[in-house]
Image 1: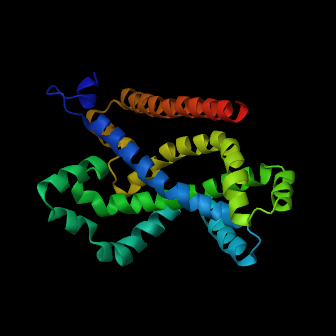
Image 2: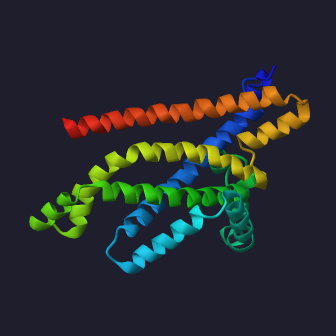
Image 3: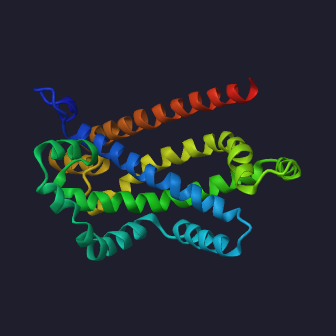
Length: 249
């Protein structure tokens, strides 16, 4: 019944698959922001420098203690009024060569929503980055203190000690919770439907209001989310197994 909303007769993606692709784009771009931001904040929270700990702690506590919907609206209206005119992403892409437009449509979707899409990615990246920071902090602090003491006793510089001894062990400990955070990012992406980003939840809402089959539509949307998140879970399990094998070999 909903088959042509997944794939059209000509083989092109239907509304629901278009929404699924937008959800994947949101998760990828926000993840690319959240991972380095969260890693930097997590390492800063374990720093000896009080200033770094306070700055990172302030960022983490603000983002973790604000409802994500409120954060979406704050970032959307602030970025729309302050940063979007400076970036002029939508205007730049509209005047770009056709080859660049085609590549941009693959990477970010509809070009007429480029500014809103960028705002959504930044918002999700900031929000998820706060949780990544806590994962990284916990992973670093889970490494036995004897590792630090042994490295210092051998005369390793602090940066070398952290990069080559502590962080490789912390990465192994962080993989399971980071996988959970990736899945959470996919699910949290539904929040940006309130600013008319045409991701999976938004397309499901539009379709349900059109054909009046709420059970069928939302069951299909739930199935698509499950396939996406379960695939990420399997990939994370495979990666965790590979890393465990590397460390025990």
